[in-house]
Image 1 (cartoon, rainbow, N blue to C red):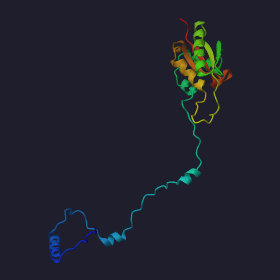
Image 2 (cartoon, rainbow, N blue to C red):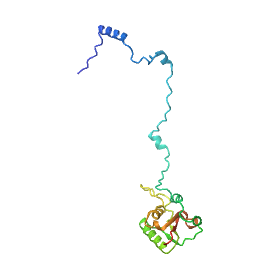
Image 3 (cartoon, one colour):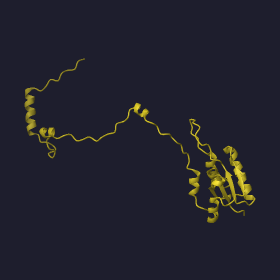
Image 4 (cartoon, one colour):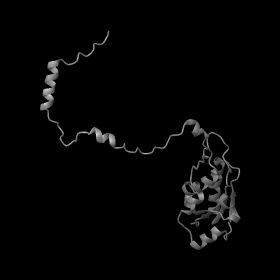
Length: 198
């Protein structure tokens, strides 16, 4: 089915339209009529400069920075922000390695399932025997990620031991936890200062 062409205006309709245009008043008198001569002379406004989006090939050619995964803040940072609960002089001596630990626990090579009960029992035994300063060695953990699809946290025991000491069943026996001094293992070990036995 073909479309009909518009028929156009008849001469009497054109006359009627011309008379209506003469009597019509614009609704908005404040808007000036566009002057075609001045509009042609004024230059167009300068467009803001947009950054060009690189193509997919250009994006592939750009070097990608290595992605690092930090699951938790460093234990040293967390422990350094905790208030000192023990005697200030003894705390300073302990941090410098001037106090000698009375017992030590080495968690090297243990899984979390093995290390947690070992730490729990060790802290209870040390507290019941009246010891005050003990050394818990965790090791610094793996130095790098194994490249698997799921990133692994570096030093799982190093991150976990302070949490077990602060939130576990033995938290009431512990007065202060701090990274060990360099002569006792540095960031791979912790000084644990126990409360006095009642």
